[in-house]
Image 1 (cartoon, helix red, strand yellow):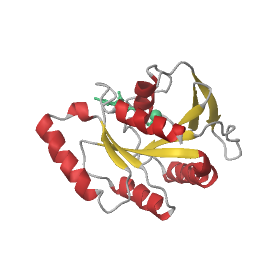
Image 2 (image 1 turned 90 degrees about the vertical axis):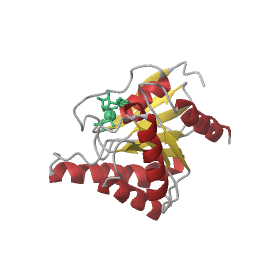
Image 3 (image 1 turned 180 degrees about the vertical axis):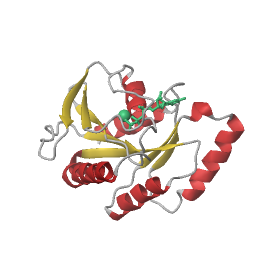
Image 4 (image 1 turned 90 degrees about the horizontal axis):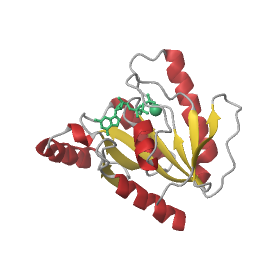
Length: 196
Ligand code: GTP
Ligand code: MG
């Protein structure tokens, strides 16, 4: 799909900020802080719209990017930031819980991003378990594969297939925002969902 038009349509910062009108639906991106959510959005859109930073914890709000005046990409705040205070973590949990309780009806797909280079973190497992409990099957995007050699990537893919086999995951998509790998697979899911 060609992205002809993109705008930051809505920023949800406070508990009573309203969600935007539903339009043709939304695609949400969730994952640990620094996993590459904003970078992936920019790569999919083909333009720098989301803020990317070397310092984790940059995206703290729910950002709605309106694509072609039809549907949204939703950049959710990152979790698992080691230096976050207890208050910050509590804040994150509230924002995420609000998002999932109020907006899943408009969600066409959820992309859960996990760093391809490491083992599954406790916070990732917690999110996957929670999604399982509320009946959401995410697509798992393994990010930053450009940082792995080809044998390392094979090893990690095997590892993730095994470790994620206990969860109901729609698809496993290895991806690199830098090398633009795996983006077509993500777009295929989006196009398919929008045509339903
Ligand atoms: P928060 O907003 O803090 O939750 O982080 P985020 O998940 O939005 O991550 P962001 O896109 O800001 O990227 C974090 C860091 O990882 C930045 O330094 C990016 O340049 C880098 N990065 C993101 N994607 C890739 C990738 O595919 N390959 C490589 N090599 N680096 C990446
Ligand atoms: Mg971000």
